[in-house]
Length: 436
Image (cartoon, rainbow, N blue to C red; front, top):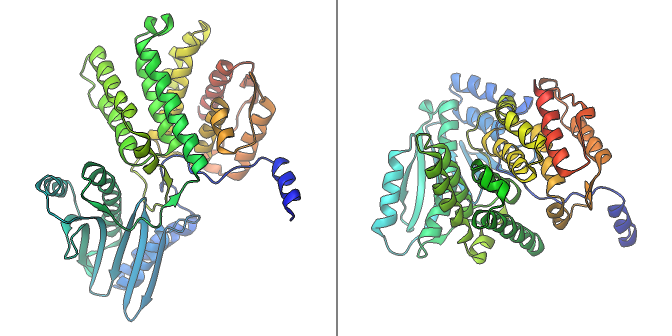
C-alpha cells in the first residue's frame, strides 16, 4: 500500500491506536487455558512435576500478550514471566521449584528500607523479601516439587509477582539511592501520548480543585457532591491514564481512605478525602512522566467477578440520579454518572464486553481526550452526540465479545443523545435494564 493510499485508508475508517486502558485483569480464562489447568492437576497427581508446571504456564499464558516464555532441557524447566515493571525468573526440576525477582539495586544498606522489607515479610504467605550476593533487593519462593501442587504454586507466583511490582515502585520513589533493575521490557509511550495524558491529569485534577475552592451554589447545596467529584476524578484517571508509581498509590489511598473508615462523620471523611486528593497535585510533571508507560502482566488484582456488582452500583445510585436529572442539576448528576462508571472499572473484574461498554461511555463523555490520543471515531461533534455511531459501536462490541453467558440485549429506544446529561443518564439506564 502506498503512503497516499494508506493515509486515505486510515481517514476512511475508525482508527484506534494501540493504547492500554485500565489495570490488567486475568479473571477470565479461555477454554483452552482451563483445559491446561485440569491437565496440570492430573499430571501432578501422577508425580510428573515438570510436565505439571509446564501445563500451569500454559494456563497462565495470555492468548494476546507475550507475558511468559520458557524452555525445557536436561530435566530442567526455566521460565520468565512479566508483571508490570518486574521480571520474574524461575527453574523447576523433579526435585524442587525456585522463583525470584530482583527488585532494586543498592550500594549501602539502610535501616529504613530494610525495615519495610521485614514488615512486608510478615504479610506474605508463600514468599519472602531478602538481599542477594549481588547487592540486590529480591523476593523469593522455593518449595519441594512434591509439595508444590498447582493451586499452591499459582498462589505463590501470584503473590511474588504482584508484591515485586508493587514494592519496586514504592522503594524507588522513596529512596533515591536505590537503582531500578530489569525494566527493559516495559513499553515506552510516544512523547505526544505522554503529553496528552499529562494535560488530561492536569485538566481534570485542576477542575476538581477549582470546584473545591470556588464551589457553585449547586455544589454547596449537596454536600455529597464533593465526594462524588473527587472519586469520579481519581477512578477516571486510574482507568484512562493507567498510571504506575506515586499517582497510582495516591489513587488507591483516596479509595481506601474513604471506604475503609465507615464510622467517621461525613464531614471528616470529606475533609480527609480532599487532603488526600490534593497530594495528586503535588506530583511533579517529571515524576508523572516516569509513571506513564505500558507494560505486560501475568496476574491481575483479586477483584469480584461478574456483572452483579455493576448492576448493584447503578441501582444504589439510581434514586439520586433520577432526582438530579429531573431537577436539571447537571454538574452533580455528571459527577455521579462518572463515579458509577469509574468505580465499576476500578472495583470489579468485568467481562471484556462490559469493560468496553463502560469505556465507550468515556469515549463519548471525554471525546476530546480520545481524539488527542489519535482516535478518529468522534462520537461528539461540537455539542451534538452522534447516536447512530454509538449504537453501531455497541453492536460491533456484541459481535466481538459474543458470549451466551453474558447475553447483553440493549433497548436502544432508551438511549437519548440530545445532551451530554441525557446521554449519561439514558446510557446507564440502558445498561441497568439489560442487567436486570
